[in-house]
Image (spheres, rainbow over the protein chains, first blue to last red):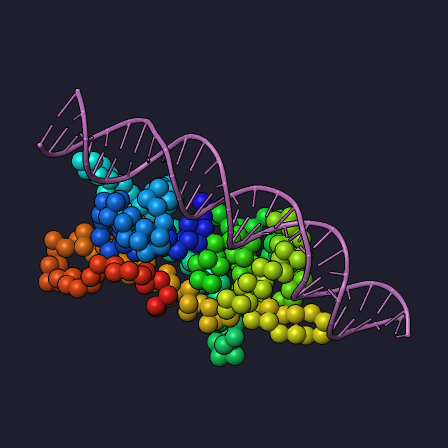
Length: 122
Length: 122
DNA sequence: GCAATCTATAACTCTGGCGTTATAGATGCA
DNA sequence: TGCATCTATAACGCCAGAGTTATAGATTGC
């Protein structure tokens, strides 16, 4: 699942914020989200699963609770995904200011989009 | 619509890439996406509308075509949205290395999540 | 052992979003 | 004027995914 697909849900975004603040038991963050969004525990549990399977969270057992924490590795992927857009954007913005710095010639940055989107090749 | 909701769709991500490379007529990028994803022109038109209404793209008329281009303003919002996570993440990562720099005391960074998520307050 | 707690899963429903076809509006051109 | 082109909208169908209730599995404490 693409990192940006995962973040395309307010409940998951909120969960990430909570666990980024500090690692904690599932039920703790879950309680907050259940109240804030008015949804049930199983609903939150499934979001936790998605976040875990997509690499955003790690989980470890501790007694009968499960401690979740953000996974630094996910930061890389998210940043990477966004960096692509930022790079493209900046190229575009640079082009607008080309009158000043004309030393560059963009060259073969884009050779037409053939048949499949680049999407999954970081 | 939240910037990250907008990006939670591969067709829209692809469109952004195409327009970031260079501004162009709707039909031009649309043709590419129609072929790559096997969807119709009206389907792409709706994605373009979403991207425009959420501030990612601007549009101007030129003859009977519509020229779309990425809007620099959207970059700010997207970066802002991601920066929140990066900040929180980094705090977390810093905390892991606290043994070295212990001068800081996190203090009132998080005073429990009362009733509503911060989500929309950049 | 038994009850309580914590989390996850199963089975199911329902809705929002994405798709489609048909068509309207606007512009260009013979 | 009449027809082709370009883009957007209308009206509708379908399905992935997010929600629900019920319940299982694991651990703790009495």
